[in-house]
Length: 133
Image (tube, rainbow, N blue to C red; front, side):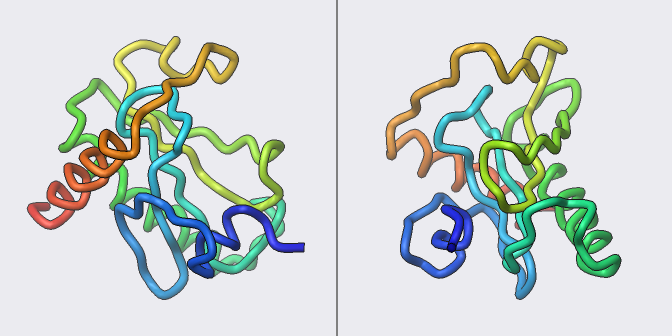
C-alpha cells in the first residue's frame, strides 16, 4: 500500500516542494510546528529509517544537510532542529524544524495551520535561499 509520501512522489498528491533529486524529496509539512518546517524523504518507500540501504541512508542525511542550510537562510533561527520519529507515516522521513527554543521541537504542542498561499510563499523562500547558497 502506498504511503501519503509515496503518493506525493508519484504526483498524486500536491506538495510544496523545496528541493528534489533523483532519490530524495524535501517538502513543507502541511501542519508545521514552526514556519519553514520541512520533511525530507527518500523517494523509495522504506518504513524504518534504519532499514535503509547504507548509500541511500547516507545520501538522505547529506541531502537533509543541504536543505537545512536553505531552511536556516530563509527562516533565520538559532538552529535547524532534526527529528526522526516515523510513527505517523510508514515512510522514512526527517523533520527539519527552524528553532530558537527547545519547545519549538515539541510535537505534542498544537500545530500551525498555514494557508496554501503561506505554504507556497514558504517554499519559494527556501528554494530561493538554496539557489543563493
